[in-house]
Figure 1: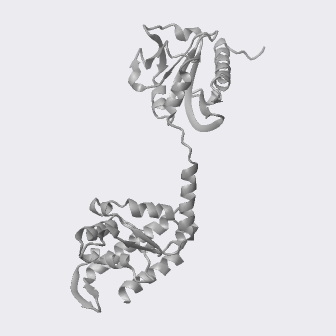
Figure 2: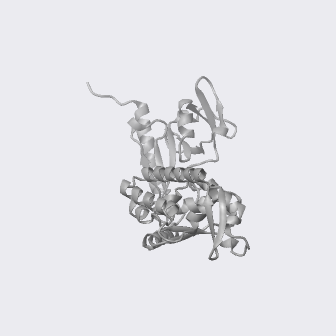
Figure 3: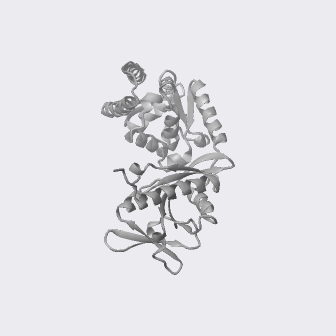
Length: 328
């Protein structure tokens, strides 16, 4: 007595083998078959190749081999009947899915890209999609694969640009962030969030970037008002505090800092204003100041916990901020 292989098993193995040969030899691409025990509706992936460059662009394929898959002709093609359980599987795929049918002699080989809008229910727990006669593996399959996968991009310049920016950030000391007027008027925070993301590419850069930033508003240079007198900037800063921008972690408290001064002015009610030696001095409401410090320290703590920053650094920054605001 011996183990037996069924005719359907043989057809499946033969179909997979031929399709792999076709992809490698005729499409000049790479076929990655999926083991039968891991086949839940996709038999393999085609990795697209351009001029011998492997692109990492993948296409999922479901392969059916046998004359029976041509037994349901339509006016313009063939009905492929699938199981309902595969629909969610295909729809959740992050790569395009193609269905391929091949007769036993490999004379007729047709394809269709899976598209839920082209399916119809048939029978119980079944659906069908038409595979056009004109969609032949030997003629228009390759073009369809590249069109479905989307453009292949050469990222060399972008890679170098990002490395240059990251090197500049890593090697720079204090930084000044220019806030565009459009961000102010539209209450957008892409500029600061993008910088924070840049500074967070690794822990060394993030730690070294603490308390090194100041902010300014270059498009308001010609405005005769002082920055703290411009309502939309004050509202932008107050909103940034309320949404949790970790200003206390990044703004420099060691030197005269426009950012820290403007930040508190945006949030706290001014009880007294006076001018001394061409400088405006303010006395802020004590309750507002308490709430201001609590909110900003909370945002800083959340940010530092998220990025696993040491408590010693937290204490260092906290002491510096308190001295800056209270000890002045």
